[in-house]
Image (cartoon, rainbow, N blue to C red; front, side, top):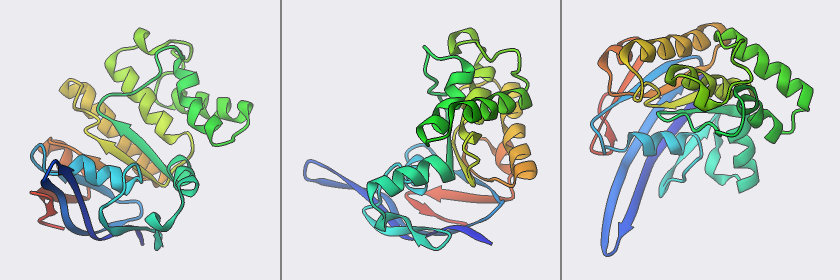
Length: 224
């Protein structure tokens, strides 16, 4: 079953009098419960594409359909709700709030989404225990290793039980062993929680573990 579809997705920017085309008419279909790797050299538009899939950015033209609903006909409030409830984001840098504990960082998206405090706490605590951080609930990011910080960011992406996780080079700031542990967790979420995974990566080994591989060259998908 199709979860996300893009139609002639284009994105361009103006630099003075120069027009820079980043995405050049992308048509892809992403299936529900799939694991998709997006590969390509730096600067070909992978992160831009991922940001548009998650409604963090708007296309210049074209459309993203989520369960056949055109995202960019929605108003800003509806898009904000979509990002909070349907999509989990994981980035190369964890973007945890340094003044908050691991537990508080994971609770935050649920609280923003209107979940009651005790329920948000219960969800967050359960997820942190699930990834082996049950003894680190009250530690702040500066007291955690890089791998632990990224695991916190993974479960933060899960706390609203999204249908899709968009991961932009989630292993790029980690050593190879820790990076593979993060990938294994994402694959586990896909298997056990039936969450669709779309991951930008430079790593061929990681890409080989995904069910679908999309290669981007010069703003286009060349092997969809």
